[in-house]
Length: 630
Image (cartoon, rainbow, N blue to C red):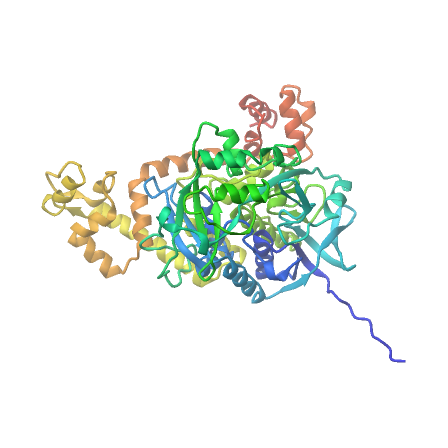
C-alpha cells in the first residue's frame, strides 16, 4: 500500500477577510500591500467586487469618498477609471464643497479588473468557500470555519458579509434565501456572534428590473450625456475617456402608479413579511407612491450596464412587487411600452450589527482582533463599504504590529465623518453619505483629497515616494498660482467687455486678478481668455486643469475656508481630551439619565466624541469637562 502524506491545506494567516465585495476587496488589498499575509475567502471567485445594484461609482458625497480611498492608496478610483463608460461632475452649478464626481462603469469589466488587481497583489491568497463560523479563544479571534469543513487560523478576521447574513429575497409573495439573486445566503455567523454577546437586527434594500435594451424606445426619453471634458477619480491620472455611453431619463405617471397599486396587497413590505428597515433615501417605487401620494410622477434614470451589453438598469424603479405587476407597470412608462426584462426587481433582507459595538478602528469591542466593515455595519452603497474595508484592513495590520491605530477625524475626511457617525450615533436605517453630514465640507472637497490624505498614506506605507511627489508638486504649483493671482493685475481694457457680458460692474482702474475672482459671476477660465500675462504664466509653467481648479477655489472661497479651519481647530480641542474606557458614568448623578445610559453603552474615547452622541446635551458635556478638570 502507498502511504498518502497528509499536507497542511492552509498556512496560518495574519488576517482573514470574509467576503470579496467592495469592502472585502479594499480590506484585503490594503492589509496585503502593507505587508500582512492575507487570505480572502469568498463564495464565488467570479463575482469579486460585483456591482450588485446600479453600475455606477461616486455621486453626491460618495464621489469624494472614492477620491479619498484613492488618495489613501486604495483601488476603487483606479478601477473606476479603467472601466467607466460615462463621467459627470455633479453639482457644478453650486459651490465646490458640493461638486461630486460620478461615473457609470462597465459592470462585468469592473469586477474582472478588481480580480486582476487583487491577483497581482503580493501577500494575498484566495479561497472559494462559505465561512459559517468564527473561532474565538479567551475573547480573541483565532480563525474561521468553512462549509467545506476547514478550520483556517489567523491573528485577525475582518467580516465584510454584505447582504448575505441570513439573506432573504422577496418578490411579491415569493420568498427564498439568498445574498443576492443567484447566490446563496450565508448562515451560521450571526448565530455564533449572538452567543458571544453581540446585538443584531435586520435591514432591507432592493434593486429594480433589468431591461433588454433592444426593446426600449429611446426616442421617447431625454438623453443624458457625459461631460464634454470627462474627468477621472484617481489622482494617478491615466488616459482620458474618449468616448462615452449616454444614460436616459423618463418618468412614471398616474397610470403607472395605478398598475403598481394593484400589487400592493401582495407586497412583502406592506404585508409585513419584510421586518428589516429600508433606505429612506433610496426607497422602492411602491414606497415612493405611498409616501409621496401627492406626486403624479417620479423621475427614472435608464443606465447602460456596460460597453457591449444590451442590459439596462432602471434607476428609481426598485421594487419587490410581484414580477408580473412590475412588467405591466414598466410597459406604461414612456419608452418601455414593448419592454422585455432579464430579471425582476426584488427586495433583500439581511442581518446587520449595530455599529456602536465597534471602536474607531472598526474592531469590535467584544472580541479582540475581530473587525466589521461594510453593510454588516448598517451602511448602504459601494463607496461607504469600500471606505470601511480600507480602514479595517489598515487598522488590522497596524494592530498586529502593535503600531498606533489609524483614525481620520471629521475635519480630515468624509471617511472620518462616516466612521464617527456609525460608531457614535449608530444607525436606524441604512446609512448613506451626504455632503450635509459633513460640517467641514468646504475643507473636504473632491479636488483636494490627495493633499489631505496622501501624506498620511505615505507615512503608512500605502503610497510610494513617486505618488507623494506628485502631490507636493501639485501643491507647489497651486500655491505659486495663488500668489501670482494676488500679485498681478488686469486692466479695464482687457476685461471690461467680459464683465459687462457677465452682468457685473466694469473696472475703472487696474485690479488684482484675485480680487476679480471673488466675483461670483467670473471664473478663472474667463480671466485666462482675457489676461495675456496669466495666459503666458500658464503656458510657461505647463499647468493642468486640476491646478487651475484648486487655485481658483482657494482664492474664491478663502474666507469660508479660513472660517471652517478655525471651527475645526476649536472642535478638535475637544477631541484631544481623552475619556477613560472604564469610566463609570452611572456615578455622575449630575448627568442626565439618557446621557449616562448612552455614554455607558458607547464608551466614547474623547469629550469631542461624547458631544456628538445623540441624547448627550451641552450641559452633560460641561459636567464631564468639569469632572475631569477641564
